[in-house]
Length: 70
Image 1 (cartoon, rainbow, N blue to C red):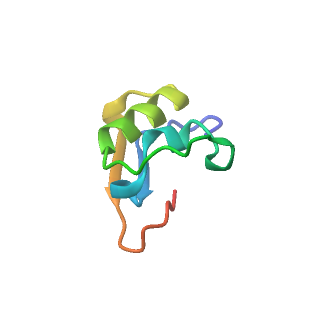
Image 2 (tube, rainbow, N blue to C red):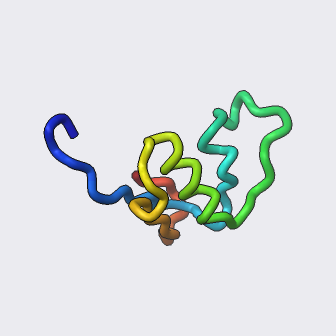
């Protein structure tokens, strides 16, 4: 960040239960709430698009506790 270059972006969390729409709209403000969806490629696409990075620089992985950590 700043003068440093971002090489990779790691998204870790409950990938199997997140819908990429969760990352675009606050769940509390979504009506109806998006269904759970196992879509790591969709999450990768939203994150890379939002941050203006190539999708190949974004890794998406499931964590055991199911919490979106980073």
